[in-house]
Amino acid sequence: MVKRTLALTQATTLDEQLERGHLLVKLNRQSDAQRTFEGLAAAYPNDARPQTGLGLVAIHRQFDLEGVIRHVRAARKLADHDRLYYEVALGTISPLTFTEVATQLAQAPDAPVPDLDARFDELLELTRGFRVHDPARAALLELLFTVTREAMPKFLGKQREAGIATLRKLPDKAMALMRKFPESRDVWRLVFSSTRLTDDPRKARLLANAPLPAALQQDPDLRVQQVRAQLDAALLWEDGDLLLAAMKSGMTLPETVDADTALTIRATLDAVAGREGDKASLQRAAAGFTALAERKTGKELALALNNAAMVTAYSGDLTAAVAMLERAVKAAPEGVTAGYNMGALAYRTNTGERLAELFAKLTEVSEIAGVRLHSRAFLVTLAEAGHGDVAVTREEFAAALAREEADEFRGRVPLGRWGVVEQGEFKVSLGYATQGGLTVLDEVVPHWWLVMPAPAMDSLLAARTKGNKKVGKAKAKP
Image (tube, rainbow, N blue to C red; front, side, top):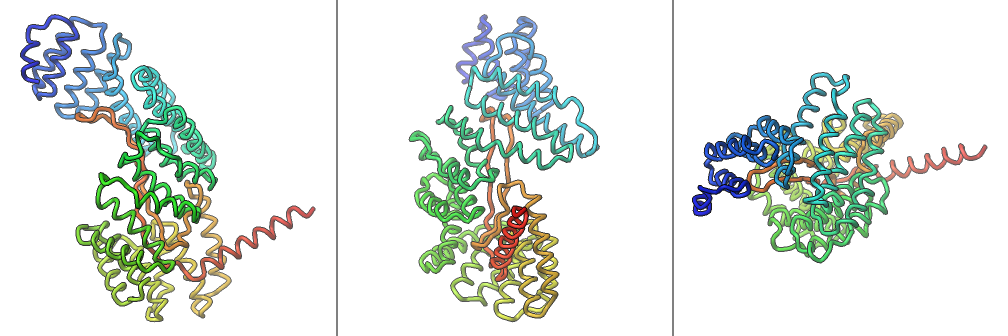
């Protein structure tokens, strides 16, 4: 790069001088690069590329986001927009737009967001220009911006059901985009992440099991996204076929997948199989979670210890399981799932005191719907054993389940009856990286917690289903 930069010192054409300016940026000669681009901007006032170069200097110097955007917006009405212009513009204007919207909502949550349509008009105009350079990524961004533009006013207007209905359109649109751009990694990530949004189990299976094209079958990131989608959908819909598909995917992950990620997936799958009596799977799961616990800290350590404890409990060693759960609680006191499992094991061994108080507290403080519901189901179990009012606890469970269903944005409330509850993170972002250029992140990072289901859960759900059928018949009779 140094040799090429020196060779271009006396360059006279615009393209060569632009090349030299960008080489100076890469060589961290930001002052020289800025002088070069400023001179070109003065000499070629109608060309967008010098302004793009000045924007890059602002990024590399101190990631001056407002300075970058000032230059790309100055170039908006100029000529000769290249791929770099659109990548810089989309990667900086988009995050700033959503940051500004979030700030305004925090300051005045009930007030309309000013210029919301104009903000999205700018983003959509950029995606249309970007089509020439990267049609697949442009189509993906256009879809995300369009759906967000449609859904946001509904959520802001307290029309939650209408907003969720808009998000429910995303899986179909992602599948259509995949058919149009079958080798786009960005589109496949959207296909797999959107499996959580559909309320149709057949569609979830179709999305999660969609076969990757030959060119992407060994892509480590996409293979991880797919097996996560398969396992999440299997747990969400209690779908045995999807669980088998996840097991096959987990066994055939490329060697280039991060070792701990692969181990977490395989150990979780083994734990589900081991809970049904497969001893070899239990042994593998125990070894996997124990190995993870040896090199994790904080919440990740708590998760690994909790899961190792439950696999140990499945094997019959409850004393060792409780010791591991105590370590998990100490590793992350703010987490309550390990505490739930301690209560569940105490109930199983008839050694716990004040379990009703524990489970009642968990219904309020747990961040995981499955833990909240199983805690309420345990309150029913305890009431049936003489520690509470059976009718009241059953009514409270039914009301809580209805609230969870009303608040759930995924296709279904994850019930955790297979001994796994999920604490997932939807990660969707757009940005510009000095090394990688325009970055589009769209994934779900699940944290699978092994739990002991409450004994009353199945009967409570069955009674509710039976009651709903009776109501349906009564309504249909007239």
